[in-house]
Image (tube, rainbow, N blue to C red):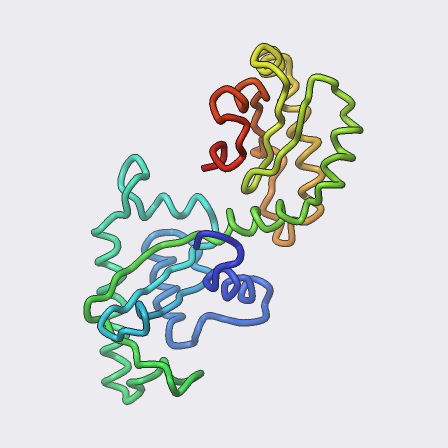
Length: 235
């Protein structure tokens, strides 16, 4: 998933809201993943690249951000190929069992036009729901509310407040102002202010006061290092 607007996120959100559920045939796999790795699987989505049945994908949607690291190698840069293979093998077993019990083609339960599940050449990926739910909540914070917050803070050294995925960046005018405010408790005060704002839109109660923090930066850096261009800054 790359944004709250992707299909995987929308389908998983329905499950989190209690309006849908993991396909019954895939629930044993979700339960196996949860037991095996000590995580919470919110959804499992089977798809094929460009509808090509010879290029199947299995997307395991974990609920919590911390769970994703359990499927990455040390350092968190690459997916753990061993665990990808383990999940693929578990899925293969599920497919074989469905064939043995005469339920082959179970993927067509909801849509007769869909291909049946196959484990051949299967690629497994792991995604996380929580950070994108946070990003969606943050997206609902309007510019008028941000301007109101900036007015309430009433700090003439703050140039702008800008949303950034699931948090915000508070821009001071100069680097010296950033350094000074880093060490006088201002970051904590501003974090609490923004937390109270974004928490209003936190549908699934993912934002926690104790681990929420905004970022500090400066207009000086923005102008000098990014040519005053938001695209370059957030690229």
